[in-house]
Amino acid sequence: MEVYEILLDLAIILFFAKVFGILARKCKAPQVVGQILAGLIIGPCVLGWVTQTEFITQMAEIGVIILMFEAGLETDLKELVKTGPIAFLIACAGVFVPLVMGALLYMGFYGTSPWGSENFYKAVFMGTIMTATSVSITVAALQELGKLKDKVGTAIVSAAIIDDVIGIIVLTFVIGFKSPDSHPGMVILKTIAFFIMALIGGFIVFKIFLILDNRYPHTRRIPIASLAFCFLLSYLAERVFGIADITGAYVAGIVLCSLSDNRYIERKIDVSSYMIFGPIFFAGIGLKTSFDNIDSSMIAFCICFVIVALLAKVIGCGLMSRLCRYNFSDSLKIGIGMMTRGEVALIVAQKGMAAGLLTADYFTAVILLILVSSFMTPILLKLLYAKDNKTENQIA
Image 1 (cartoon, rainbow, N blue to C red):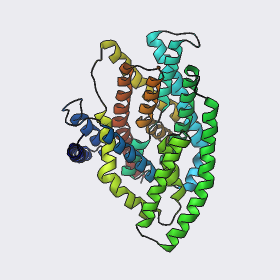
Image 2: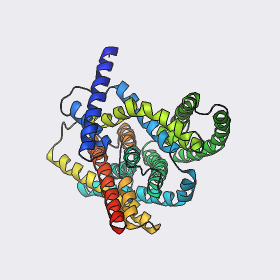
Image 3: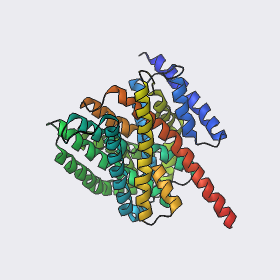
């Protein structure tokens, strides 16, 4: 592809993402909903003006990494430590319930199969896709609502990160049954090693940044160095330890969130995220969508797949939150905040296709799940918070 064609694609994406983002805000919906809709309209599904090229995919990946880095920077570390055990329980429920319900759904459509059969592995893999949580859209919605740092926002982001790690372990186990080259035990060891490295290395990096921050406060070299650290930890997480790069980005933000200049860093980073990388990421979800080669039986499966996947997260995470003594409203917010799927679900699906556990036909169901959850989650969260604000005003 020529450079000028890339520039045209970027111009179309950024313009329509901004226009539809404004329209979404006028309709009292989060801007990310409009940006996803923009990608759907300008993409192959409707107008076909822009296609999902490798360049756009890479730009979108940078967008989600920066978004998760910002989420880490805005995290209240004390609140995170306090909610850590609860977040772990919510994450476990958010993996177990979708895994079981997804497998039962597949068996309901295509029949039960004995342990170890091809159909059994496919059923379990369908459940594995449902375990994935992509909190980036929820993070953007909570940022827009000003609720990212409260008790519910911290619990959602913390649980989603833990959910991501558990989901990767589950994926490796499932693929391990199919491929003798995969070693689930090694993945567990690598995951533990990553967090040990992040703990020790993060402490050293924080001390270095503390010195730089005290010596050069409110200078652009600090945000530049922090972004470099974010990319480095994302690379190490994905390449060396086999963990999603967004986990490394979020951990990088956590390492630097206690700096006195963390808000200054976040503001500088947000400029590039808001102007270019964020819109490309959210519009990219719409660009991936295609409704070709779908028959009536696949439509029925896709609809059930989306419904079960959404309900499984709400039921699993919501009930566990309730057991952890969150009130009903906050438990519902956590359940809904955890039901978004995005790049993690796509990665899981692509790995399943490579292992022969998923065919291209079923990939449409994953795309639909990402679209529906991406649209519904920000809207439902906004409605729930608006209802709480209305109730508080009535009491006052």
